[in-house]
Image 1 (cartoon, rainbow, N blue to C red):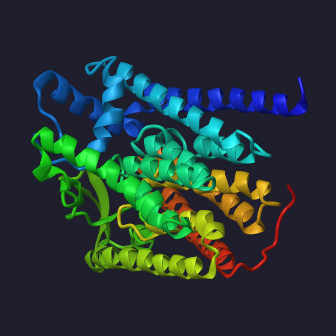
Image 2 (cartoon, rainbow, N blue to C red):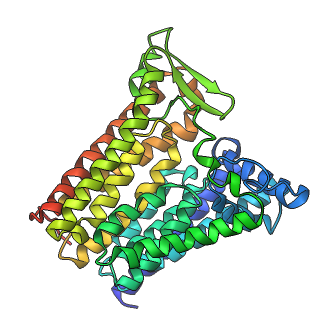
Length: 413
């Protein structure tokens, strides 16, 4: 067996061990804390299959209608066993991750991106597999790999991202750098995205749920400043010393939010800031297209955009970090194929790994202590949020270099 073959065998052994470990944590060790959402998926599928009460088709839902597909697959095994459904869910996530790893390392000069992803999953913990974000993360990996290839592959990447957006909105954001990078954006991006959306709309219309198709955009408008969000950091720290700042439960949405002077204004402002930040990135990508550097900017733009969606989000749920897996894994792989990894990619990837580990420390292990006002989890969460801002800053610098076509420092292969 050659050295390359041994390396890939070791990668797959690690892949199995990481996914087995995360499954054990989520299903057996901390199911109530880490896999609460998975059991909610099971309950929705029970209502759908056993009682005929379908989300979107019969009632408004917090998720896009495409989320029904991954929720239904484990339900083939059971809708009444919490453990059985959770195991089926983990098997589905593992299968999707395996496909993504195959695509990531196929014909690649390195397995560094795949190894980074495994380390990231292990550090992020059971929430990395126990949410819908675990379904769309491998889709984004495959889509970004394909987007770097031929125009037909770009169309497939677009279809995957659009399908992913109908499961969880975040993948849809990556269509923005794809439009900029494509030579024929209407044919390779707009048309495939429209085709996927047409299939979804027609299917839902046939089921009688057309009026509720976009309900996920409005069902959570009442959200405040969630405790894990980056912007909530000053108020989270203030809970350690002030009585007028508290962490409270939003019972309607089952989320914990910070309340106190300025929190309502901050939450409202973030809606505007997020939109402006995305618009600014769109302008940068337009500039890159005019300069002929949009293809080189595709991956840095994907990373910057997804990090913006996390840092400027008033929600800030821990599973959002799973969005970063795709651009980092592909950057760490494609960078070698193109002559070496930029140092900023390596630096940002290390920061993201640390941020993932701190995220797991807070959720699920110290989450109740955070809500109780303990200092250690509050400081840990604050440190995690500072790291996310650092990742965004480094990614933005890398994007600026790519747009300008300027040479940047490269690390060893």
